[in-house]
Structures are given as structure tokens and as C-alpha cells.
Amino acid sequence: MPHIDQLPSLLLKINENQIALEAPIMELTNWVEQRGAADVADNVRGARDVIHRNEENEEFTKMTLAVMMTPE
Image 1 (cartoon, rainbow, N blue to C red):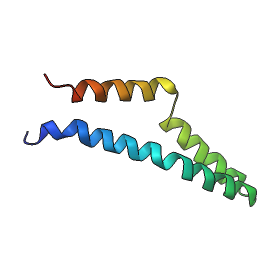
Image 2: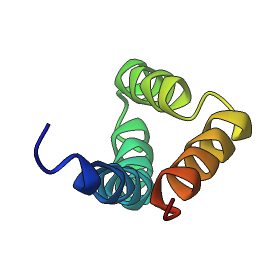
Image 3: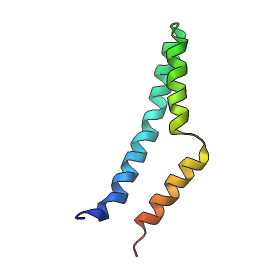
Image 4: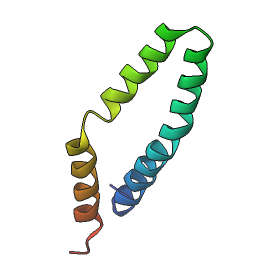
């Protein structure tokens, strides 16, 4: 596969984007909930929980990216 060496960098950027989106999404979730749409807010929080199941997933992602980016 050409450009396979760019895969770790791509995955790192995707992970960074995901983390960067978390705060504004939660702010919007709180705003929606304050306006009476608790069910929508709960759905967003549920989706967020799937993404950030727990700290183990985040640690696994960081460790895997670090290994992939280490020169052989």
C-alpha cells in the first residue's frame, strides 16, 4: 500500500479532532437540556459515552499511536 507510513499521523489527527470536539458538544448538550430537551441531551451523552467508554480506550489509542509512530 502506498503511503501506509502516513496512517499513524492520520489516526493521531483524527483522535485529536475527536478530543477537541468533546467540550463544545457537551456545552451544546447542556444548552439543549436547559431548554427542555433532556431526551436529546441524554442521547448525546450516551453517544459520547460510547466514544469514551472509559479511560482504557483512550490510553489504548494513545499507546497504539505511539507504537505506530516509533521508527523501526
